[in-house]
Image (cartoon, rainbow, N blue to C red):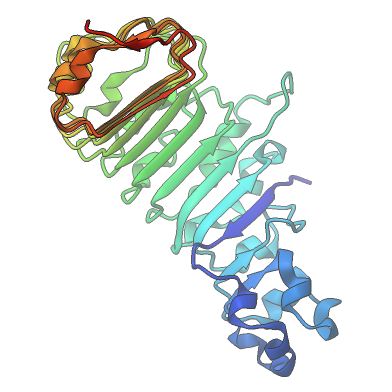
Length: 364
């Protein structure tokens, strides 16, 4: 039987027991229809002993007719066709794990996600062990069948091993309200489809496609309201004539775990006039940053971390009059800080960690 794990937790604040204490529930057990929040993991505290033996999922679905919050992360909901998924008008956040166990799109369709209009965040996880058998086309079929309601705002896809686009045309164009997308283990063919998501404000992409050496910046051209961008595990960052010129609204940029990238090409930062926060970390081969960092006139916070081959801070930082905080961590070749840091009038804090060869602030 195809199986999956379900974890549905709504961000509506308190657990049920803080709303309806055990003693009160004992006195009003006949009014179960009034209960709106249930935390399955703490039921022995929240529910009276008189009904603990009956406290299974079926009991909750039958008795708690106004249920809106259900934490079932440690229960055995093992089938996408289960009535729990079909009946509940789920809202808030839903995470479905072990999708590698689902054998067909027909099985996945039974989850009935398309009708759950109150669902705002969805996480889909495949958890295969290394060397596991992957049946061609099944992952794409399952993903397409799990199409949620178009009002979904946040989507996370992890461990997908499909040959075609991991966010294929089967589902992405219908996401008119999607604001946040995190694609982990993303294949190269997926990136082009992201350009259709013009409502995105946050995009995080980790690339694990060995055949795709270069990050495809073309897919960013239509994402003009994008506020946060994270690029992970890219082998190369391309040279661009016009840079990231469409990302006028971008305020946060993270470039991380790009282990083979030796430099960030000129042009990447020139048009990021709204950028306020920059993280560059765990790029083992990175030696230098481009001079066009000087155009980041609204940059307030910069972090350089895990860059073992960088021997000096980029001189372009000298021009960043708005920089208020600078964090430098694990740059073993950096042995001093330039004294021009004192000329950055907005700089209030410099944090230095794990600089093994560090000696002093220089006059360079």
